Image 1: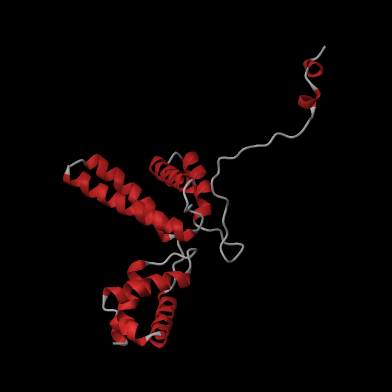
Image 2: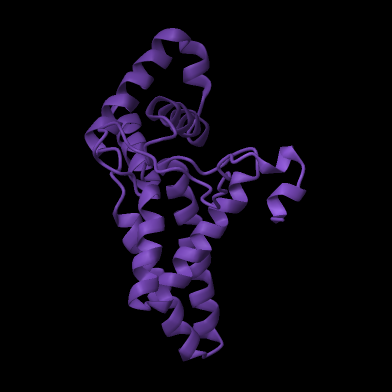
Length: 198
């Protein structure tokens, strides 16, 4: 007598097993349906690093994927290139500070390891298609003219950093979360436009 006959009928149904996946982000595509985003290239790059036994790249990619997985359990998951760019900027900042600490402690072995990892992070940061400077300038000029027309008294009362902060926030809202913006370029554009309109 076979084991299957001894089992109740509910266990004998031959339904396909549901496979679970541990992939936390689905491959995202940008506006053009053929161009993959930087975020969607992490898993294939991880496989390539595993096959080539590139330990520094492998550790950086694993750390990035762990951060993405942890963020997926919060209210603001990393699901776009803009959010991934912010994660990379944070990682680069942390790696740079660690590099400074290791160099002051005269740990040259750790300094070299951190430089290699920083190079990998910078390589991924270089893959982004940032909002162009001319496009940012057009957005900022439109926002300045809109703010002046809307309420002249409030706009004229805003001074220096408050005016710049308002323009940064409004510019980021116009651009959207999916497109990364180089904040240093955006701030220089805002300063240039404000000095021209002063």
